[in-house]
Image (cartoon, rainbow, N blue to C red):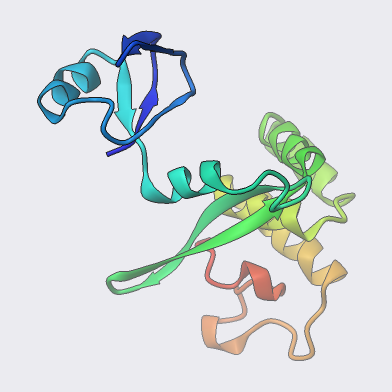
Length: 164
């Protein structure tokens, strides 16, 4: 199993620093529990390990962000949004604002990725509604709001399935 170094430690004559990946086989299974409990390492999710091992530049200048979508019973869906660093910064800027300021800023957002991420991560209803409304203005669909959800579904196809 691969682990993520949380605190500096030496294993197998190699010093690992926080944020570094510890390869499979370096940490003995009988030691992993104590190291996890002490906060030195954490289990590394499989998909994170795969992303770290990809060739540099696979996503270009974009950072893949996994967003959970609505689930249908047992099948939870995850959508990966390839966001530019400036889009991520814009999302965090809006998240740090109060509701009124955030809603006003969303009216100027032109990036679908920013709108999707805001809708997915911000729990404030006014922010979610502002993101849906702006997506509807920028990316209109032929049928308007979807009748199957009582007219409250996102108008952007990429925002479908993201919980409100």
